Amino acid sequence: MAKSKIVFACTECGGETLKWQGQCPHCGAWNTLTESVAAPASGGRYAAWSGTAEVQLLSEVQAEDVPRDSSGIEELDRVLGGGMVRGAVILIGGDPGIGKSTLLLQALASMGATRPVLYVSGEESPQQIAMRASRLAVDAGKVRLLSEIRIEAIMAVLKRDRPEVAVIDSIQTLYTDQATSAPGSVTQVRECAAQLTRMAKQSGTTLLLVGHVTKEGSLAGPRVLEHMVDTVLYFEGDSHSSFRMIRAVKNRFGAANELGLFAMTERGLKGVSNPSAIFLSSWRDDVAGACVLVTQEGSRPLLVEVQALVDDAHGFQPKRLSVGLEQNRLAMLLAVLHRHAGVACFDQDVFLNAVGGVKITEPAADLALILAIVSSLRNRPLPAKLAVFGEVGLAGEVRAVMRGQERLREAAKLGFTRAIVPLANRPRQPIEGLEVIAVERLEQAIDYCRS
Image 1 (cartoon, rainbow, N blue to C red):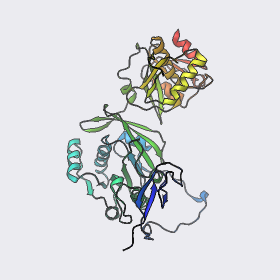
Image 2: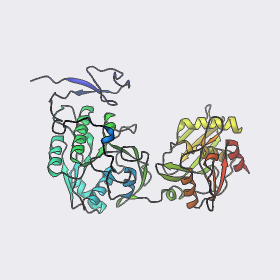
Image 3: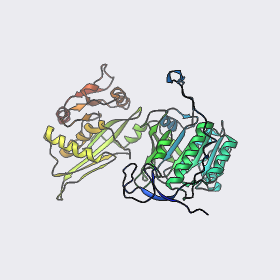
């Protein structure tokens, strides 16, 4: 009997080497090589899905609109770009217990009424899934269920039944006979995902893959997994909150960074049609250190309350802490505030928080953060019914941001009467009920809030 060949595979790029090294020789990442057993050379395990391709001119290829099928859940369709594309492979990741299986079971129960669907479970027994369906009160009578982790058996069922939508829960539990390493290893995840992806493209079945995440929050397995699929969705949320957010970080059939908001209830996940009202439910305009930011998540403008707390530092090193906002950008904004507005916080502890558990990464939050810091430092609330957005540069200038008109209309719709915006985002036509204060420098915005 031939001796198994041991290789070390990189969890970032999937590259293999014959001996362990501290640094991957392929991508340069450190401490990412894990031991696995090399797959035997079979020569033709992809032959059934591969065909002879012909060279053709790009101008001769007909560009057609991609038809989309609804998942039955409006917020999920929004994140996917309007619905699911046939033959697409969608990877959904998130923390344990956040609601991945719940959402997909709800979607399959809705789609099962009009099209053939299949739920492949490698983690739970059929009885557990039936109990979840009963608890969610969904009509899962037409959802076909398969409890299997061997990829060859799953592929045989997919070829035989030809479902339009299939859920694989989860990709880390599957294994193939072509590799002898344990399920969840780099080799197994890469091989199983490659075979499923080729099958989806050839048969037109839409695949929804559930992926585990590491303790750092990234998807477990090789980085090549995210490159193989068409769409990558991340579930976000606080365990102490009933709200869940699903964000698209990659989408070949739609816009990335789209955001869908759900509320976790006894009957499962329910879409939230007006998330701004949720994030501002406890907002008060008479509190120092609170400012309403108009942020943009994909095509959707959101109004989020950002809070700042500035207090005397009692230690040798003042603290700088932000929750839901970029930590490094906070230090930069404090330096700009001191240099160009004369407001010093070098002897103060500064804490920032985005209310509602939302994560804000766009630089349009700069101006709102600075005004919240100044309000807390002076212990004076900002003007009532005020919404703010704008990027602040190192020279103290307030720069324009994308989709300023949509942000202003969303603020006016929710009853805000004032808005501080960059000069380049000043609307050409006045917006009814909204006074727009256009500023070019950081000092102008601070002076307006001081008056």
